[in-house]
Image (cartoon, rainbow, N blue to C red; front, top):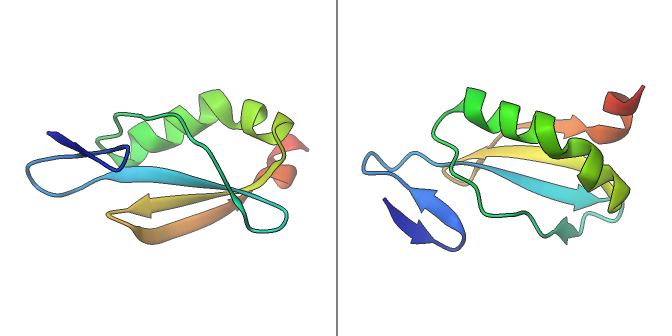
Length: 79
């Protein structure tokens, strides 16, 4: 696996990453992570989403190889 722009790229080309956004659509910095599947990515966010909200995040966007899989409203997750 080679590290490309803070993302791990696997031999088969699949990468799962999160784009964390604030209310204005700006991107918050996300720690580098090793996410080999959608389940890994969802578990990773599940452990960290409260920290992102504390930093001003409102939305998490799951990306597979740079393509949006889905968007999640983090404010709704707090309820």
